[in-house]
Length: 129
Image (cartoon, rainbow, N blue to C red; front, side):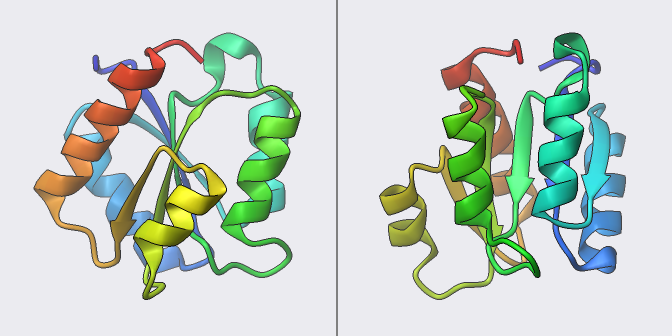
């Protein structure tokens, strides 16, 4: 991934978004944040294709709609962006597999595991939005 790679962080916890954003920005990613699923869907669908994220880090438990619902709406709209579930739910791997996420990471995220998941996810889906 290059310094032009775009990552969208979707989480209702401001501190988590801020820390992840700082970490990924320091790694050379262009980072955008959304406070919930509705904001994420709006950002993705209203952005020109060249500005859409390559990877979405998506929390599961959020007000309004959960991460599974966000993923389902993205897929229903034909959007194949790479989506990694990032959550503190106990059965994260089975939930991610059952719902069709491209990866899963437990909170708090290990730095190296996070970067590896982003690179793996983007290389499997390709780096174009």
